[in-house]
Image (cartoon, rainbow, N blue to C red):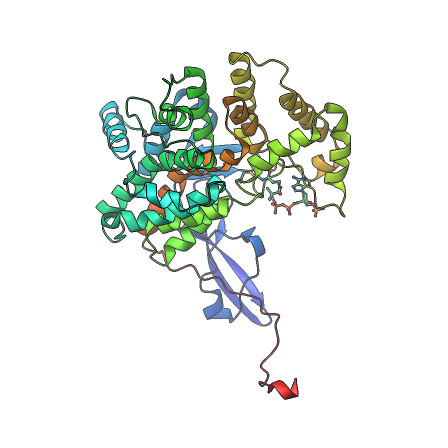
Length: 431
Ligand code: CMC
């Protein structure tokens, strides 16, 4: 626990209660109210946890006002330019950039775990053939605890390590199997001579009837998309993983819970929703109509890929993603992509509009990612699974950190009860 150098005093009628205040390495101070109920017989109320730190963490830091994202202190822009996904995985999991031999060892360990148990193929076949790949992933990742018993004992650090490696290695295999199943093609086994990103493309796009050559441009773009989604501190799905894990649930079950949470359109489902929205807008001249709808309080429509709970400035990931979209489309020889044109013009108009300026709504990571994934040949239903497989390292790093934390307790929020007070049961005849 960080040292307390200051205190905060709460005045409750005549009573004053002092609380320790901790200063983090970066970011605002934190008041420790964990003894509030015991000392003041009162709870705090904070729907959506807008002002509540639920844990200590040394993995990722976001400065929402500056639009800064650091992983273990390293800015995402530098990592996206100089690093690669598996190196970032190592950094998130172990806290430091690897040496050459550590990197080789880590890559070997991940590569040796990319296949899934053959019996899992039968499990896939139980799903409806047109199931959304996210539905399949929630089920199959949850079922991993039934296939890998030897890495479910969370009190054993070695088993925790094996579970982490297994999930990082197998999630691309599972996501690609979910995709292949949904389009009625045979599963493609991993090929360990490929890079992590290249292997995922191979498993998604290869077919037994033809040779598949991984395009280095797409491979690099895929790797970058994975990096930009790898971790994002205590977002909804990560908090879900931590909450599920706080009860002692096994890591596969916890990650399945994270995938379920990610699926929602306010979170990871936004990338699919965003591309669908851009296609629905279709042409630049229709943008004002959609901007008006987004501003209309009586219309539930929101500009997907815009706004963020923490960023009140440009999402730094969106900047990198926008550059990637330009690069990938140019390298693929796609010029004047209508969706990219709509996206850029929508961004320009929204950023000059008082509504978006006053509410500090900027493009987020999902605004441009769908355009790249679409150009690569992925259907929209695969966008959120790709987010999920990329975020798995973040979830598992946060889960491991939580399990090793001596202050960790079961997550158990309180409530502001507004239901009926105690009343007596009435027989059916008296109701
Ligand atoms: N379009 C129009 N208005 C918006 C939008 C938007 N995309 N986002 C927020 N607002 C308005 C909202 O109506 C509210 O207005 P008012 O104060 O008048 O009621 C105000 O801005 C604050 O919104 P909020 O819902 O209280 O903000 P939040 O922090 O709870 O929600 C958010 C953040 C990301 C859920 C929200 O901005 C949103 O729904 N965005 C669209 C979905 C999206 O792109 N999600 C991906 C987020 S980044 C990737 C990820 O985390 O998975």
